[in-house]
Length: 475
Image 1 (tube, helix red, strand yellow):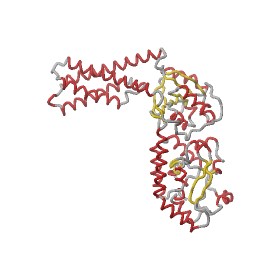
Image 2: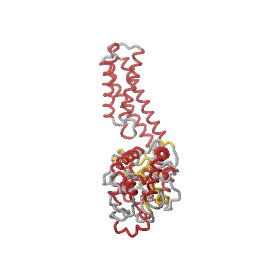
Image 3: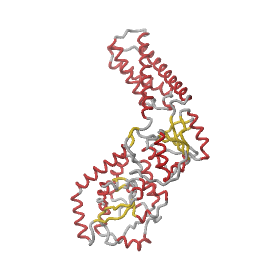
Image 4: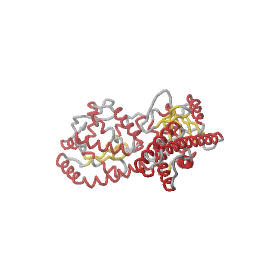
């Protein structure tokens, strides 16, 4: 496939939001494989117990005792195998040593349970030993036969996963060899790293959706400076497998799989796509409505204080750069004198941010007495709940910056504009105004984007309360 370089003409609401909720591609295939393995394990254990009863040298079993023990054994052993992850695809289901340990452990639990709770109908140790040996033999044998049949079918082109490879030309040959060693993938297309550039990205993912791609292999060199792109794969329902290079990496949302004998970092797509970010938006909407109602007396008090403190409007509205570089009006309580923005040019020489992208002065002469108090406790930010209610902002996200700051961005900084801006964020709870270099703040924003989850938002909100009450880095 050749990805054409064309401008992106349609945007998702947010980098982390899907175009709709749907079941992940390939989920039914994986589910059928897991159910098949569970069925075969049940069959193996049932056969092992039936043979144990037939050839028991010590006692005879009543129908009730025979059935109740089998149900207990199936529940315990199938559950233990599932907990150990031995129904996963790849090398997990072929991990015979782990299967041996798991079955043996569950058999010890069976022995303990029957001894403690069923002393009146105690099952002899000799029978349990026979059952244990037959269970291990039958489960390992059927797993081996299952894999043997699967490999034969894949050699004939059946039961293969359609995948897409994104790699640089110099690594293409070696990466194709690694994938082909696994003998379970059909490479549907290959593209270089430019297909992940902003101008090509939407075209690439539209192609992947049309082709029904379930997994994408991406070289580390093609994605090392833009791991945030995994959100595009995630919202498209595509599992990402990052092929290694000489660099070592570890992403918090990743697991490692062996592909062609090589450890490969994998970031899985969710089972149901599009629900996590929808939860965030619903949370924002509900919280903004509740907080606006609860804080209305505080709003009224602040309005009175500002009115008596200095002449000018109650609210300060400023153009900020939001999602996808679009301008919107941010709401704040006014904390500066009238015409403060016009005076900023004369204060640029006193800017305390080293790289000059942001504008911060610790003792800004434009701030009013009430304004200093409002800033100290971040009360001036409260009207932004209206921005959250309107969907222009979120409770948590990278701070929306003025046009003056964004104009100084380099192209790599623009990733901040691909997610909904927030009232608070990782930057604000990690130093707030004490961070004197925009690059440090930018790294925190990238860390937030790459590692985002609904639970991370909750942690940041709780930490925000602590930071505000302690007045950490606020001025």
